[in-house]
Image (cartoon, rainbow over all chains, first blue to last red; front, side, top):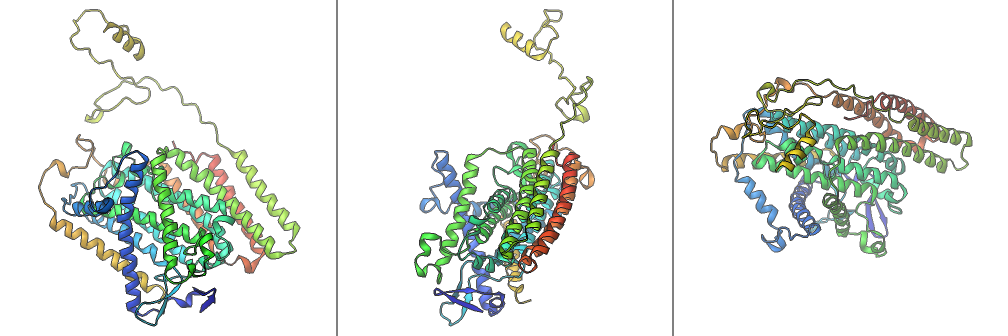
Length: 447
Length: 119
């Protein structure tokens, strides 16, 4: 079914999909594939340039016009590097992990709508600018994103390295936590659109973008999509100050490049999902939408790209501005703020929706719903956090600086033994056995 | 099924790309053996011996995983509910508020018991 409205042919239901001949589907798939590769190369350059500007640097500007070929050159260089397989690695999973990551990154784009129904050049066929659409489109994206985590976890585990393992574990906990908040934020969208299919959600936003009427959902989604992609300021899985490079510490050459590619495609994917669900998808933004032809033909691809790049810019902006948060703060934000807020907001939206649908509105039910919501909120604020128990003062334990054969730092309750000062005459004047600061200042004064 | 076939096509493309590039780089790249290079990276010292099978993890990760499953199941119920909401009206609202409240009780309990603390 194709609806003719204002000269724009939009997809009315899913019967438009699955009718393409195989060659057309193949062309679309290849186009999406090439589009994602090129966009990744562009985005790496874009990020480096923008961050450089924010830090008063020039950024890559030598290779090609404006340095645009820099990321291509980097990819070629990685290709020619030695492919190291660590001794401790689980060989099969070590190779499989980056492949899983990259495949899943590509897959999510299958259901993202780039535009309305268009004429295929050189033929008399018409086809929607979207590879395919499913009755469970958005669920498919979420599912594919979840499978993508396997790449990170398996990569971290199979490397047989402490840093990789920690990075992989952190990443799992982080991504599954934020996936809950992300999915809960989407419930309100489905409530209004009455569908999980991406093209129908875009259609439903013909009059008003969901970012405007469902602003809290949009904000929750935005925050959790930064957590979901392991990007600054939520990039603890690859925190270089703590974990070297996290789950890809042991990866080199093209396997490393695969993880890199997957991360950048995932950024584009979540941006595209946010665009589709909240910013009206490929539909032209307001001043442009006054022009009748804005939503026809191939123009919408441009608006779609502009919106996606807007999100990409914010990703870069966040990285250039915010320091990395602490892991416990990050988990607290997800579990104690985003999830309860998203749940309450869902209940509120459902109540408003039921009110509007009911027209006359059943007051008793409404009051009851509001009461439950308030009760839940009160419960939440009363529950609060328990005051942490005072740790019992640990007894002074003897400190072995080479416990287990490795140099180790003192644990709580242990004291670093005073190093033997070199060149001190035995029996000479000894500093008092007081606390470290006093001793240190005494030494400094002595100097 | 026609709806799902193009996804398979895209998956094959992605897999092909990943495999071809990784194999190419393995063939093209140099190979110079060095014992230290093949050790796990640990800032230059001898790598810490890894326990077989990954060893033990902080229990926090397990709690997070279990909480995730609880909420994921809630989401699985919420999605179809949201899609079919318009045709069910007030009944759907009441039922779902009851359901959310039940899960919320468990959530409050976990919070109270310190299951959401990460230190």
